[in-house]
Image (cartoon, rainbow over all chains, first blue to last red; front, side, top):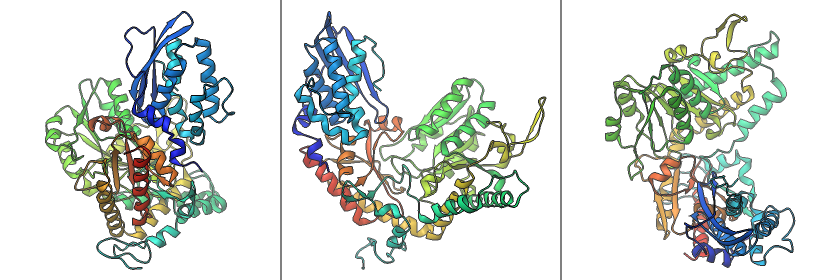
Length: 147
Length: 422
């Protein structure tokens, strides 16, 4: 049995209260939108790429603690990574939150706090919304919904 | 067990007249445990649980008497037809319709509204004509009108909602005019629980020759509906909001309006004579019931009507008013909880937000304590924008809810505030 405090760990609450890289990015090279039709939440993700490398990433929007913390932690994790590395992290993270295998070796440890989300299928979308928007931003397909 | 003050009790006949412990025995679902807690189901406005009597009426029919309707000469088909017709008659009496032929079975409220938008409104809409909606409508009473308005070049106008969560009738009087063809309004708001003054709106609509459609989805489980007294022209509702099966609802329409409407779906059962040159359509309601209808569900809907009427409207209203008053009082006491809407005339629906905690997170914490609420925009995004929120937490009450269950709701909200450091 999960308790509220197990799902809402301190790090998640911290990032919810004080999200990192929470700002628009006028000089962005890519932009993606995530929209959750279930709750009406939406967020924007911006990034700057130098060749294959993501040199800066930011987000803004409204959302629940899970989606905001997931977006915030995502920005801290993918900054400095290549597109391929970021995609690989998302795949691994996605497997974890959907309960299809535990956290893989290549998953940055700080993302493991979202493992509890697998017990809440309705919240998987919250945990992955920013990542889908990031993908859209990397594909420079701004406006693609985060489904 | 006795009660004190004005509060009802869960055991024995409460002073509000509803024997809730007996009612609860009719709903086996309520014995379920969710996340190691007894279920506290406060989401009846999304869909209500079904009593044994409804499910047994459906299963008895399905297991012992099932056949298609209006088709066979055999005994079973004739019996099924009779049961289906009886269900229609039950609904006729339930809403106070003049004739059973004014009751069309549909897949639900959404389908009923779409039927009116498509078959009544679309043929008569001209460019510049107006459809008047309200700011508190469910998406199902917005989108069908937008679709036909767009096709016809018609304009959507919207009656605003006041801070109390009521329709601004002064504005309504200004918004309605000679170009208004249809007024479509919820009888009861699915978010605020507000009961709208339908007779007043009906008079307004009819003063300019417009027809009034009432979305009754949220009203039918709570209040006795009398379409004559309401003065509307169409009334749409769903069985699953009133302790009946999902997959069926109904549209009541004034006979002359239904008779003037073309069919919206073609198929078997809605015709008189078919050739490849021409088809003559059956009169209402068959005209609007193409294909094999939801027969078993109609039997279940009739059983739900019987169940509600056996409980008695007065007892239901009093019980729910007690729950609503107590819930409102206790929620208002919790720091950081802001109630949305406080109309004087309301059914058992409470919407609120908690400072600094997203409705989804509130919903998850409550769920972990076994409390089922809805946390979202409730398919009423314009109303969310009106109140400056993306969503709310909504607790909605049914005949089976108790004052003790409010303890679990309140405890869960305190827990959410603790977890989030409120």
